[in-house]
Length: 311
Image 1: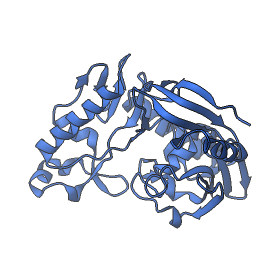
Image 2: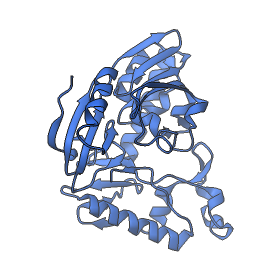
Image 3: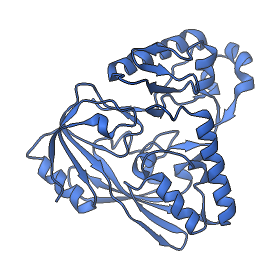
Image 4: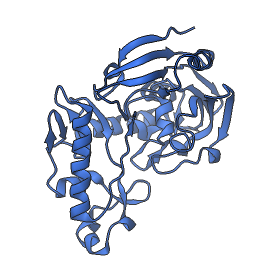
């Protein structure tokens, strides 16, 4: 059984390299280890939080007075065009498997950081693709009863950067395994498509600095007042429905390079907040509030965070 550790700095498990100590911390590699830890935690603390790759969550400076469980369940199993994947498998590793087996459907995720579980929870997407497009079934562990739950694509209630696991079942169930339904494809074409997305990310994203990816969701065009759309119509893109990219309105509002302490809105991609060296979670939060306030003032819309917070 996995050993529960004490006072582990969460910044070690954050892509942003921010976060104080978790009172208790454990890494689990199997479904049995996950259920065993959940059972053990009942006598330890009522506060339990499950994480994946740490690529889309802001940990607090003061840490977490409870148990953080990092799910690192591995394994990839292929049956025809169906592929069952452990929640801890990195997206890069899954894409390598797809290439080796000539399976198409996830090329849009080339260069996407983090693991499968987190990508499913937030219905990650880019370049008109989303996780939900290829998901057949999701298996999760009920954190109260320790039972395995299986849900079809429809039952996962996927939405724009959202799912039932991010809303109704937050802190109630932990994603353990995901089954994808993919398509047969030409290996060379799959490689070309993946490499194209990787190149675009390297070109556009500030990958030289710790970051959490896109801080805000893009905003649907219907959320903007008509008076503002005259200016913004030229920037409409499908994601997968018509939106105005947050990076664009942040740039137009003069927010590029805005900084609070060592937290900075990247000049390379103005929907990324980067850690210049010793940023604090509170600085990131202050910067987020400044950005939201400015966009509300200029464009009369409320930006919605794509990242999550551990509170």
